[in-house]
Image (cartoon, rainbow, N blue to C red; front, side, top):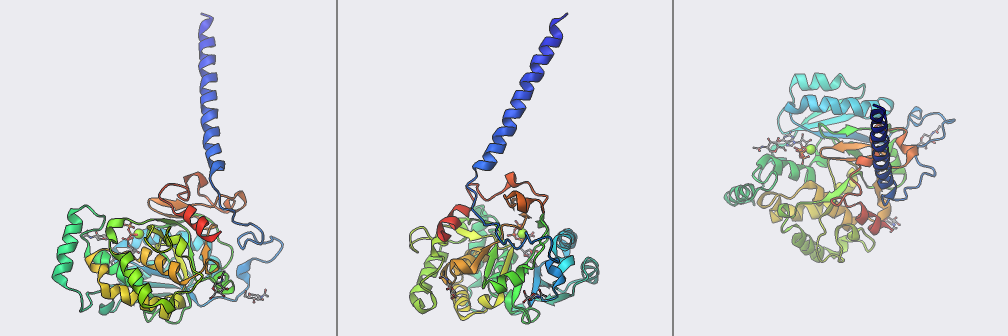
Length: 369
Ligand SMILES: Nc1nc2c(ncn2[C@@H]2O[C@H](COP(=O)(O)OP(=O)(O)OP(=O)(O)O)[C@@H](O)[C@H]2O)c(=O)[nH]1
Ligand SMILES: *[C@@H]1O[C@H](CO)[C@@H](O)[C@H](O)[C@H]1NC(C)=O
Ligand SMILES: *[C@@H]1O[C@H](CO)[C@@H](O)[C@H](O)[C@H]1NC(C)=O
Ligand SMILES: *[C@@H]1O[C@H](CO)[C@@H](O)[C@H](O)[C@H]1NC(C)=O
Ligand SMILES: [Mg+2]
């Protein structure tokens, strides 16, 4: 009779030890991460609390959120906008530009306007920016697309996805509603923002001569871009004068440009300089790729296209890793690891994508050290 409590006690002790050691090991993993040493000195999101908050300064950049979306994504987008407003924009009030290949409905306009005090603008994409250019062999494109679908490539047999990737690669920054802006922040329906951003990232970009900002980097599916790198190499050979000596080639290639290592910044989030995309360098590159036809004959994504352009044309001081931004686009998320930054967040840093095998964080560290 006396033994039962003893057994119960032993079991409880064992459970406690097992629980404690698994807690410790996950905690240990967390500290074992090869954490990049993002300096917290003068970190813009850790402003001296005795100073007035940054948004009280009324200086703003010429900047906007740009959201390519369909009417059917309204509810997913409202959830995203609510978080973006709560975490950042109710303080800074940057305008929104919504773009669509079909006219936005009145309901879409009403229910997005209702979520912000900032200006909202709604644009229709010109037909030439969302259709086959005349040099594309449509039958060949149809045939290759079907084949890619049969091979099980994600979005392999999807034409609208290709128009979307081409539009995001070469046209959104030239839309008439965008011409008055210098900087953009790309947003998609369903993404989540989990940290307070208490400074102006656009002014940060402008004042620090940053041209491209990102928060998640990863490896591309090779089957979507079989000839993208050989086309890029042909471009570099034809236009050597457009490639600066100091660039970020090391981020996209492990062998000095011989082959592409598939690393790219995940372009569903970007904060960038529109004038970089409108530059002679970028436009020449985009048009070269567009003529080669890979947006339709293959399935070139805007993420590898933007990222390779960043690798060719920008140097490490012009590209910014927004470590402080908690961000999720399924199935991956980024969450800052430093405790000080985490105090502004609700994400769990242990779920970070950054040091998993598909991430290119280590490559970024290598390329920028
Ligand atoms: N207007 C419009 N927007 C589109 C279309 N296809 C995609 N988009 C938008 O383009 C962006 C990227 O499309 P997604 O379907 O999210 O593509 P993805 O992020 O590669 O894939 P997911 O993993 O499915 O999110 C999103 O903001 C979409 O709302 C389209 O046919 N018309
Ligand atoms: C407001 O911000 C601008 C841009 O960063 C800066 O030049 C200016 O000095 C700031 N004004 C004040 C009063 O801090
Ligand atoms: C094409 O891809 C989009 C996502 O960009 C998706 O919403 C749509 O359902 C797909 N269409 C087809 C026919 O698979
Ligand atoms: C990066 O490029 C900018 C603009 O061309 C230049 O001012 C800067 O000195 C370069 N920095 C490095 C580290 O090469
Ligand atoms: Mg998406």
